[in-house]
Image (cartoon, rainbow, N blue to C red; front, side, top):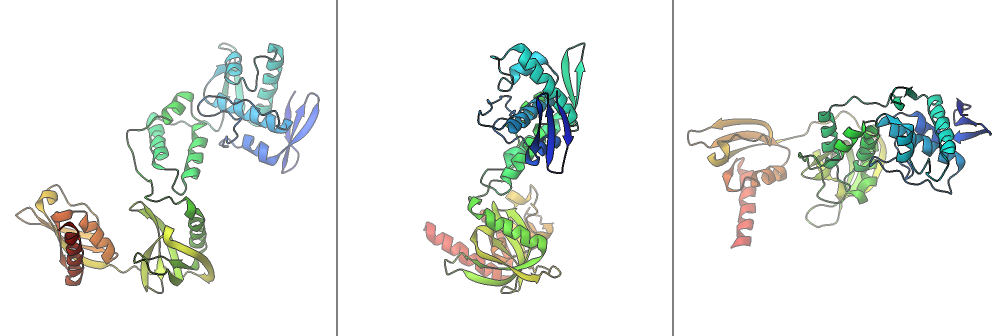
Amino acid sequence: MYGATQSTKSTLTIELRRGAFQVDSSHWLALISPFAPLKSKDFWLSTGKCIMPSTSESAEYTLVNRLAALRALLRRGDLDKAQIKRRLPGWYPPEASDAANDRRFRRDVKALRALGDQIKYDHLTQTYHLESPAHLDLTDDDVDTLAVIRESFEAAGPKADEAHELLEKIVQALPEAQGERFYRKPPLAVNLKPAADYRPHYATLRALEKSITRKQLIRFRYQSLDGSEPGVHRRVEPYELQFFDRHFYLVGYSSEADNVVEFRVDRIAELEPLPTRVGARKRRRTVRFKYRLGNRIARLGVSERFLNQRVSHWQDGDAYVDAEGYSDFRILQDLLRYGEQAELLEPLDLRAKMRAVVRQMWGMYE
């Protein structure tokens, strides 16, 4: 029979009929944690299929995998012994005798109970029921929301792998019907796919996260849009990482710019943390401007694209908007999205910049 006792902080003793051996903590901790990820190719997968165990595995690893597979299956609903053996043929092989599989199954149930799982047997239905702290009482709307989150994270984006691993931990604790619902393609799509492949820049993102958390100043080279040699920003106070316009940006104070500015992460190179700590967060300067929005769009309402917007409607249906933006570049880019329906009015120097952009565009289409 099985018994389980924790012998040290790093091992768990699994007592067998023929003796005992100790399981490494990296294995048994996966069983003790009710939300443990089932990463091994030999675990019970969310698709409901079980891959055959490897013949090269150690006895302890095979046992841990088999117990994890049984637990994952019972999480999905009540089953009788015959159903369990059919669903896990890799662990209870059909070619083995019924008596051998029954003995193995009974020992596995005892081992899971020793590890803390509450497995109950219903004599009336002859089924096994897992009352586990891993059970989640989620509604179908909750599961649909999780599916939207799953679809929102693309493989090329930061935190995508972590997000999918977290969702897999959750779905393993769902009943089978809700698990199947989770994998349906949701009708709602929230696009978080970056416009560029950020996988080559994961190290930069992780380094920036550490510096922000530790409140460390940083220095780096930054490639500007004009194609010149990358400029050096010697002292940058990193505040946060943001995702907008389908790119990742570092927002921080640059001593060279003497302002809080945005740096696109994929253009940052030679990042180096400095021993100096970041002080109080500096206020970001803004640019106040005014623009007119044509009645074709304004009659349906004015989107809040800018900071501190104040909108006034005229009798002709046009809207006049006073607002603030973080930079000339951002203001021009956002207004250009309105096409001919938006006219930048003030300040005059920013209006002149818009005129130069429009003239250059006109020259391309003449």
